[in-house]
Length: 185
Picture (cartoon, rainbow, N blue to C red):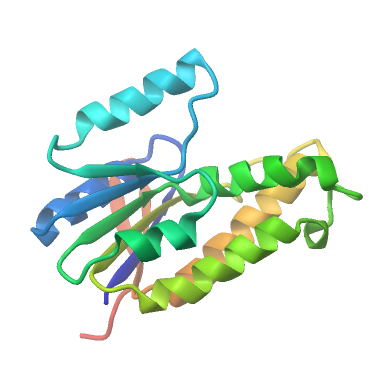
């Protein structure tokens, strides 16, 4: 079934576009939220996102086990929104950070490797429509810490691998969508 990856920078309009895609879909919508409210500011952001969505949409919080959650939540007539892959990556990297031998070595992150592989295996099998939101972090400055560089590198790899499995890929800048990949007409 159709899958779309929506990429963009902070406050570019990615989530708004994903929500519009779900509204246009017309079926039941489930939002899979990967953010965790670790402080007051993040709690407020999460509350703002929830308030912006229609009240009848279902929300599932899945900070780490995304593939399993997608598999359980997908339905033939439903639309899933994953918001966002970048926070999911961050959650997994931070969970594995204590085990890092060399912060620049993604091979030292077995949980991340497992979850990433599970996501890629799951996406093509999902019934219904799936819209994934992710930040494009590779256009900015090079992070000054090894963990920051690992995060940026893995976010780029994640976006590339998910984009390869999706039917449609859209980049959003200043609220304007640019189609990078579309299904054949």
